[in-house]
Image 1: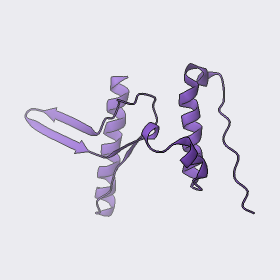
Image 2: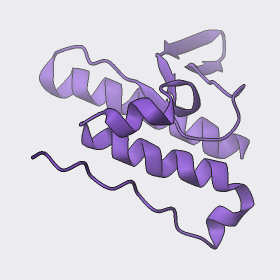
Image 3: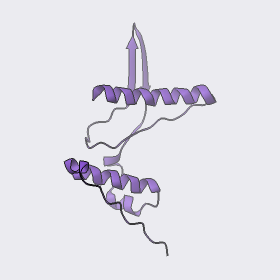
Length: 110
């Protein structure tokens, strides 16, 4: 698991750097964490070799602490629905491998 986390943090750094190289403009990288561990919040990629150290720090958004389910249900943003589905999977725990969460019904606008 540690190598997977390192790999994902490395890719976050690489994508940020490639945007800078290609467009000559700074980019903001953000980690959206959808896991079920409230204490897991990696916020930097660090690489060090031979006295040279690179530290890439980025903001972290943890889905578990972002909004209540009621706020997400009222939010018209499509990402709110995706967030609700992910939260349902987290709440299902070990059952998430065998069951599919039911997304909330869209509110009728009329």
